[in-house]
Image 1: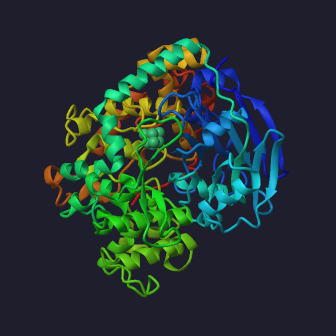
Image 2 (image 1 turned 45 degrees about the horizontal axis):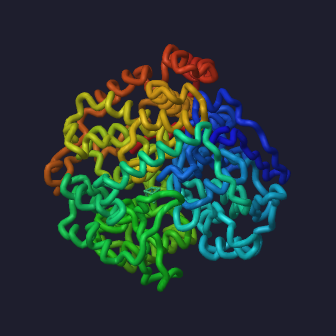
Image 3 (image 1 turned 180 degrees about the horizontal axis):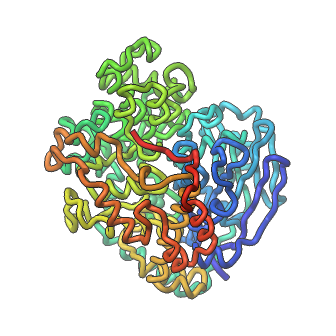
Length: 626
Ligand code: SF4
């Protein structure tokens, strides 16, 4: 018995077929589940240079080894694919119940291939896999869609679905699961490109059975005991991620006015306490006693008068200081509007802040922006621009391509104002004030993400956030740890008090796989996952030149940033050398053959030899940077 089903469902939309397959045991022992196993399948099955929005790309839905077990904060799920934002391998994590329903249906992984000829949705029930006409569902927002799916297939139905922006191929469309979203990297765009509106499941509950039920139960009790006492859990339960706002402002790393400044004068208006005042009810994911979410009432747009689960910190920064505002209700309403279209709030906010700075510097005029006066803090113009992006019309059509592609098209001074790494819009942490975090974002195999390796030491005082030297090893370690957490899937906010040793005990009791019971081996698996993702990107032409930061972060001293004022990331090259050395990469950022062999990655050895041979041509996947 094991909490892993060991099975995947392969769905081909070209011929509307489906097939159940065993996941090879060697995939599991080397990569565990979720992000690890997903990276392995994408590496093996996706041809280099495949267009992310073509039928050739694959969409992977994954649940972790510990999902659906009753362990607290381990039942999120993730989407993986080649990203239309970055051209790299990508993973995006979300909550909701869908992942657990996958497990009830008997799958750790669903692979969607090909492209349907017409709008389609897939429904899974005890009778099998059904391909359904989605013509009547096309255009619905996630709430209308989820309600319709429940009407069609019963109240017990859970789904992964896209909104109108995913259908229209806005490049940073999300996938919804209940009130939660797999937000980043355009996973909803990939789904839309396949003419796939939703995957829904209604099957009887079938909880996974651990290999050693008694020990597993004891470990859950231990975890619950830790959580009950832990102050971080209490803070998350009461305030949720909005509590971060004041901390980052104090550190001078709150991106303000398109990353020109690092703090905001009226930040008190956006504090965790202030958002607590707007909270109507608690919300959260399946089997999580932290329940960090909060329902808040919407005053504008299609969801007006209803409540949404949000906003999270990342949305607060994106529709607050980043665009020159500190209006709580505006943040809630902008969040709801993005949700109604199904677009990522971070990328949307960064694209709009980019447009505001272009406008402030006279690079674009209101005539270029469909008559919008894009002054900092102009709420009406920002709402209109969200609508244009979601509808992929007007100036929003260009911004919906993402900040990198938009800047390339606008040209001139626009390129220097586009805040992205490898095409992924930057998150709510100013890199100049947290140098290790800057390195983590620069080297992330999914582009400018705050969730690829978070150096908590720079926030807790264990490491000086303004020091660059010595960060290579730290970031190599936290990226490995994140890879393990993403392969379980342990929620960053719900895994309070747990460490790699505890993961090892849990995994062994859950699966009976002896290798998982060794914490050192888990760290090796974490490194193997980061490494195979890097190998995927090397095949696409990515290398050292792409492990960088926007020029602003490297050359322009940060303004109004408290302790981080006047900081730049001055010696990224040295930090890269340290990081590559820690992971056994060459000076070009490519995994060395010796390290590939030590990590038991024979599948990558020949590829890496081919792509690094003298005279090997650069792939069109290479992203370049402003
Ligand atoms: S801590 Fe929050 S995001 Fe994490 S599993 Fe719990 S409710 Fe979901």
